[in-house]
Structure formats: C-alpha cells, structure tokens
Amino acid sequence: MMTSGTQTAPAKPPGQNARTTPVRTGRAKRRGRGSDTRLAYVFLAPLLAIFAGFYLWPALATFLSSFFTWGMLNPWRADQPDTWVPAGLDNYTTTLTSADFWNAALNSAVWLIVFPFLVVAISLALSLLIWEAKKGSGFFRSAIILPMTISLAAVGVIWGFIYNPDPNKGLLNAGLRLIGVGNADLKLGPLELHLGRWLSDPGVLHLGGLDIRLTNIMIIIPAVWAFVGFGVITFTAGLTSVPAELLEASKVDGASRWQTIRHVTLPSLRPSVIVVAVISIIFALRTFDIVFVTTGGGPAQDTEVLGLLLWQQAFQFLDSPKAGQAAAIAIIMSFVLIAAAMPFLRKNGNPS
Image 1: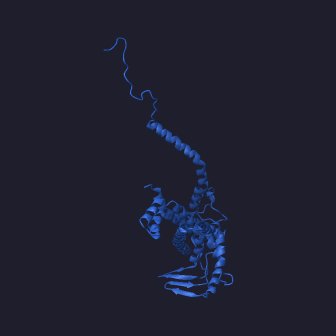
Image 2 (image 1 turned 90 degrees about the vertical axis):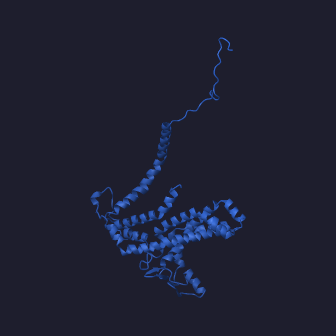
Image 3 (image 1 turned 120 degrees about the horizontal axis):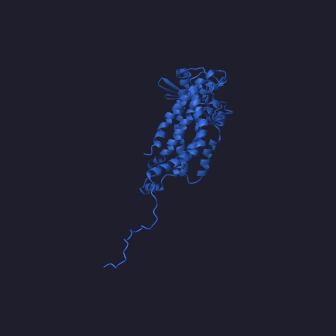
C-alpha cells in the first residue's frame, strides 16, 4: 500500500552515476591516425630530403647518364641538354659483348663464391670456439676484430710484404724456405700450385675447358682476414640470444657438445648467417681497393674485377669518353646486388 503524495523513484542500474568515457567513432579514429601519420612524416622529412639528395638523385643520374656518351673532363649534366650525346643502349650492348667485361665478371664471380663462404665458415667456427673457451675469450675476440680497424688498402700493402717473392723480404717465402719447401711446383689432380709466386702465378684450377687462376684466391685471403671480425661480432651477438632453456634441455637429454651445437646453436644462428652472407656478397661484388693495391688487376687481367674495370673506364684516362660505359657497369652491378639480396629482403619483409 502506497502513501499519498510520495512516489518511489525507480532504481538506477549499478554504475549509472559513474562518469562514462566517450567512445571514439570510426571517423575519429581515422582522423587520429591521419594526424599521427602526418606528424611522423614531418619528423622524417629532413632525413628523406637527405636520402633523396645524396642517394636517390645520384642513383637516378647514374642511370640516366648510362644512356649517353661522355667523359670525366666533359661530364654529363642533367641541366644541360644541349651538351648531351645520346648513345641509346650502345653502352650496355658494348659492355655486355666485351671480353674484358666477362673476364672481370668471372673474377667477380670467384669473389662472390669464395669470399662469402670463407667469411661465414671461418667466422662461425671462430665464434663457437671463442664462445666455448673458458679463459681468454675477450682477448681472442679482440685480436680477431682488430684487423677491421685497418683499411683494405692498408691490408693490401701489408699482405704485399707477406707475399713478396724475395725469400729475404717476403714472410711467407721465408717460412717455406725454413721448412725446406722453397719454390716448389705441386700437382694435385686438377689443381696446380706454384709456391712462391703468390701474386704472379700461384697456380691454376682446371675445370674441364675452364682454367681458373688462383691469383684471386691469394687476394681473397687477406680480405677474409680483414673482414672475418665482422662475422665474429655478428655471430657472438647471435650466440647471446640463443635460448638458455634449450641449452639446458639438451644437457638434460644427454646431448654431446657437438650435438648441442648442431641441433640447437646452429639453427638459432640462422638469421646471423644470412646477415653475414648477404653483407659479404655485397662486399665481394664491389671490391676494388685491395685489388688495386696488390695487383692492379694483373697479371694479364687475371684479377681484374668489375669494380676495377669500372674505375679504369671512368677515371684511368680522364679524356676517354667511356664514362657512360662505366655508368652502365655500375647499373648492372646494382641489379646483381639487388637480385642477390632480394631473397633475404623478401623473407625478412614477410612477417609470416
């Protein structure tokens, strides 16, 4: 029974008096994301301008100049069309039909195969050995990384003294003379070795109708010596990220040290192997300085690589109108680098 003049107000649901937070609509969310994107571009604009000015435009200018005939004393300029001497595709056809180009390409192919393989294999082995060492790991790691502080031109000079054919001056020949080997000639199946003539005629590898001079190998060795520190740094960083629980589980299961390395450590180092391999491939294709210092492309163009051929056409004779062909070589090398790095970029660009 209700009392007259009074009325009971309906009960409010719990939390009705609490302050509610307004819900953003889809349009507001898109507006917020748009403002964040614009702000990000504002901060990136200076870097993008530097990137465009110092990378994109030089790359585009190199590509455009490869379709014209010009030299270093009379360079191609995008803002002076009245001075252009069109060559069409002649620079590319001349380059791709040149025996010098394919000789340099073959020498660069030796670098592309041997150099990354040696860098990955040696640096991985050294990293594992130093990681397993109980004492002196810091000293050995520093000693291996130290050659990275030397320029490759200086490395070429140092190893030039080591390879000196004079047994009284060359360290390597002096060591061979001490053990009674001297300048011996050895034949091991398809492999011919001429000890003592390290930068002139160290030997030949006969592969059917293809003879590969080993002079390139003698230059690759000091390059590996200087570059292996990069691999050691990369693999050491990868070793620190190996899950400790996997290592403990392998010990509990009774796995030997080699089994642990093979089935746990090496699979975990796969990203580091890819990084070292790709960087080594890029380095191998654009090699120039150490070849220029040690042999200058000789003897008889046995060590002339694409980077050295490019320099010869563009800079060796400044009055030569072959700078357009040098630009064509640079474009071809760039496409090769992109093709070599594309599997790595595609795999790491796909989050799945």
